[in-house]
Length: 113
Image (cartoon, rainbow, N blue to C red; front, top):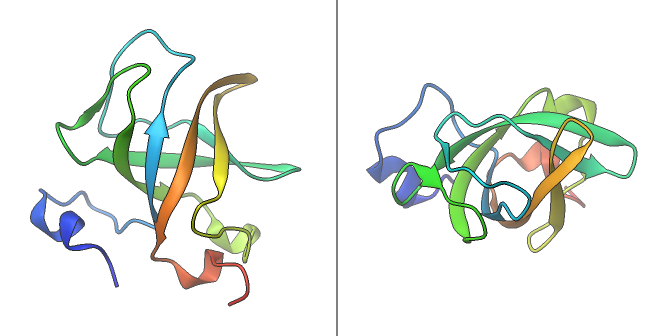
């Protein structure tokens, strides 16, 4: 079930795979809805993501923000996430922050499912 928070906002054209609390400590600019960094979902696997920030549609540097996230091609890395997991947020080779999984909506990604 997708969070009521997602249903109350102006929905993007996709459904989220997870809800994360993200902190961008390696950036010095604000990012907006549609931000597409990479997440390290496994030790040997990076994937592209799309973000939809809940509060104001933005994420400020060094500030924790809730965001809905869509993963690209989750079928390539099934059963790799669990609530509470911390993932690197990257732009190319540079780590720009971390995300903590709050809720998982795509059961294909949930460990043990």
